[in-house]
Amino acid sequence: MAMSLADLLLPLFLLVFLTRSRSQCPTNPSAIVNDTQVLLSLRDRLGIKVWNETANPRAWRGVEWSSDNQVEGLALSRFNLSGVFPATWAELPSLARLDLSQNGLSSLEVPCKNTQLNLLNLSSNSLQEFPEPREFGKPGPQWELLNSGQTPKNGLSGSIPETFGEMTNLTRLDISYNRFTGDLPDIWSKNLELRYMRITNNSLQGGLPPSLRRLRKLSDLRAAYNSLSGPLELEDGDFASIEVLHLGLNWFSGTIPATLGGLRNLKILVLTGNRFSGTIPGELSKLSHLQLLFLMGNRLSGDIPPELGNWSNIREIWLDSNDLTGTIPGELSKLSHLQQLVLSSNDIGGELPSGLSNCTELVGLSLNQNKFSGNLPDSFRNLSHLLLLSLSSNDLKHLYKG
Image (cartoon, rainbow, N blue to C red; front, side, top):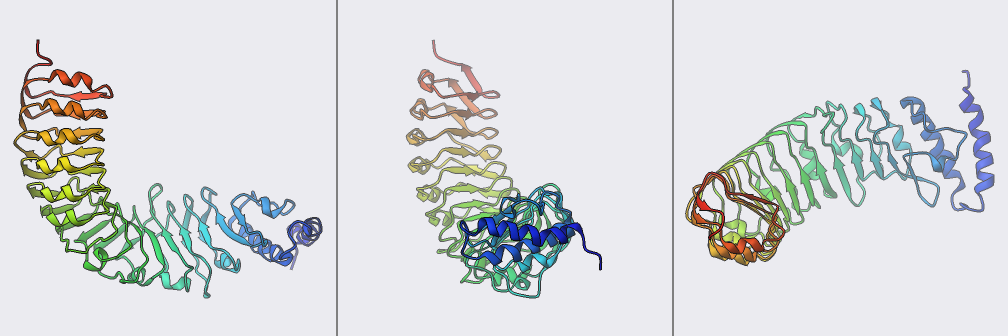
């Protein structure tokens, strides 16, 4: 078999490199030889031109070395990779992080052996299928699977693999921008370490299964742009650690459950673009850490609950494009950190409360397409940070009195 120039030069280079580096990295001099040979094999299979065997391997772009001369991570995002990523990567015994995002890979070969891998990012490739997670063997202490499509999109389809629910060390799961279908499965082990779950932009149906709602450590759930439907069912104790709940642009219906008020850690609530009806439950005022509330684009009716004035950390309230009536409760003037108040396209009327001028951090106030009457209170002149004031399509007579 003919030997390439790289095969001839590699032993000589490694001998020179190790001779020069022995005083600096004496802990494991053989590791760099083994790992460099694996990297060169990957280079030849994938056409990675920036890995030059005449240069120091520890300086190769995208290769993360440990102090013990072993490869801990491969950050190969935007390397113009295509085709199949070979299983050779598993010959790197200490590899913990593999980032292959934003390439054109069609598949990933999984070795028939356990690995130390605990972070895998396949976002923005051309994948049509994904290996069963159990094929990776026993994961490390924290396993992250980031496999969103975005641009260009992956084409993963079918049901969400049930083995995701068996990976007890799984901490982050992102399978957004794919073609997953069917009901969101009720597969999630109570011992799962999952903290972050993003399933945005798929075609998932059904509601939120009980096993998902009962994950004790889940703090961030983003499931927008799906076809999730039915009532939003929440029982006491569900989402015990949730901080971000993003269910926008689905088909949820029924009323907004008062049990949402029991999610004491919640900071961001997004229910935009669903079919919720009925009134806004006053129990939401119990969300003492809430910063952002997005309920626009539903079928909500009735008055704005005055109890919402008890929020101490709220920064943005978006209630536009509903069927709300009544007036703006004066209690909202206590929201000292409020920056955006958007009530457009409702049937709210009465005079504008002068107390809103106490919300001195207001940047945007959108009240257009309602039934407000009277004058703009003189006290609004004190809103020194206000950049947007939208009042069109109301019954206001003058901007200010006098």
